Image (cartoon, rainbow, N blue to C red; front, side, top):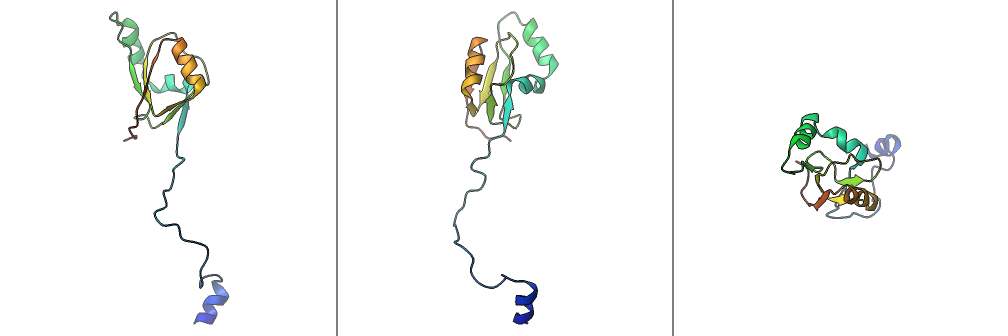
Length: 112
């Protein structure tokens, strides 16, 4: 029996490598979204309501709830103030958003 196993399933018996106990997988998992794509994820009605609002209340975009963790600075922004919540912001995204008077909020919440 073992002879046929060795013949048809080589490498089945024996020890191979070390075992890493309590291995944390996907530690580097960080889905990203650029500023261009971010504006398409928010509904048109949200932007219309924010534009009509005279009290100055800015819409809140929670990137973690949309399934992303990091906001990248690719693309241009409309001249509309907004409150952005994310786990991470790139340096260029911070610069661009502060130029448009956006508020950046760092949150450690995971996507649901």
